[in-house]
Length: 154
Image (cartoon, rainbow, N blue to C red; front, side, top):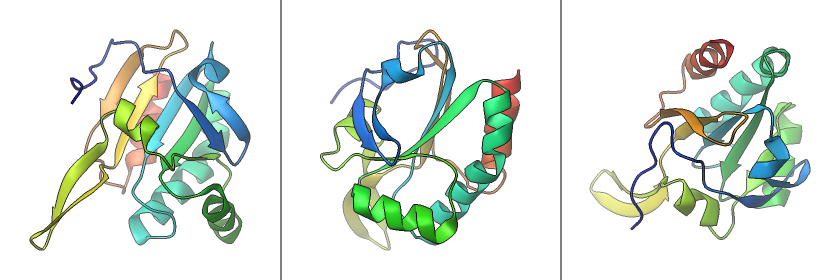
């Protein structure tokens, strides 16, 4: 188990297939990157989060930030999810879980006494220099995209 990431630390390098083609951490050099992890396409919380980030995508872009949502769903599933909800942000398919592991969001969860592994809804704001500016662990969806945008603008 690697030690948890902290603000000010260098973000782990990653490479991932997205609905916008292959992306690496270096693809975002010189820009802020809002990297958010979510459990599953087409579930209520994840859908709302993706729609909120999509609605604010132009505001993030004008603030010099790009957004990338990541889950362990396949690229095909991301494609359907994007089309169904007219999403305006790229989604990364971390099928092997390596990006989730690198960012420490693949965790043991407990729902109604059932213990299983899953993605902890988390967001990382990575600066143009590749360092983590802010971490939101255990995200509550309502108002989250607005809070992240406010942080990017600061």
